[in-house]
Image 1 (cartoon, rainbow, N blue to C red):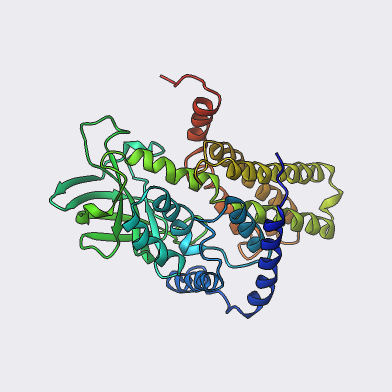
Image 2 (cartoon, rainbow, N blue to C red):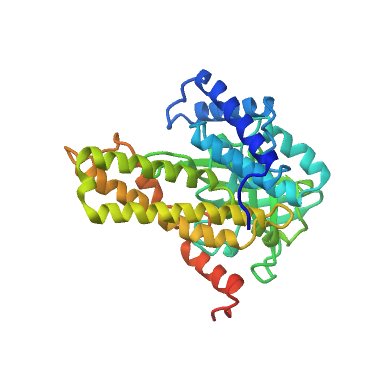
Length: 379
């Protein structure tokens, strides 16, 4: 498979690079990581800048190769990350684009692209663990509304979100994968309580969300009632298959920085560390090619099960990368590997969650075994 740029793609890449070089120096200073209202305003402002320049629709509706080029070049240039807009741009929005009605696409997609609305993800629940389909949040039909009660946990950006991609159980008597519905819930609806959670790294981009008789219009259902598990697989395909593209580029950049730091502090003389960095370099180059292949093979723009292969390996490779960073920093004066003010230390802490987020490694192993290798389901 030829993964090199076509002439049209090369032209897009060059034009984007030129635009980034012109606009990035004029951006304001980013707010503190703990200032989520400020981060929301900053992240949405960047999205509006992209939209006004004609780059707003690269996350859906564009050729997959163009989307890959956009994510690669913006990361290389040090452009702001999607941040608070992560859920809307990288998986809720693409899900609505793929599964929503014309009316739903017209209502929800333009505000995300214009940097006007933020989405959060209401999937995980306290009692479900890694078994997402074991969710217990209930939604009963009452005329033109669903009445929702239950709770969610690890709800990304709930404290600054306008909408939530929400999984609910609409048929408690159906097999657990068949009684689920995907809803778009307005976060200002009565009955919603948001309680921020603080992570190991000290940030609070996650929250618990408690739902007490929240009324959600039936018109906000994406897909058919009780068909939410299939729609969820579309969402997770985007989350696992393309949402981490920019992060792979960032990891390759960090790897180069680690090699430079090791040369400066003497750790480069350690042959074990050099081999480790060399192997990681090959690993991330392979992951980048795998991502390109996954995108090029996507059916109607939706990544396939290859996303689980990528997610499984990337999660562990990212952890290994920041363990290598600890080796490099550990040789510096004062034990820098434990100093939160040093580069890469917070990233090392956050990397611990990657084998859980977007589906645990155990779940990914099962998907690869059954859907890629064709092995029988476990009993």
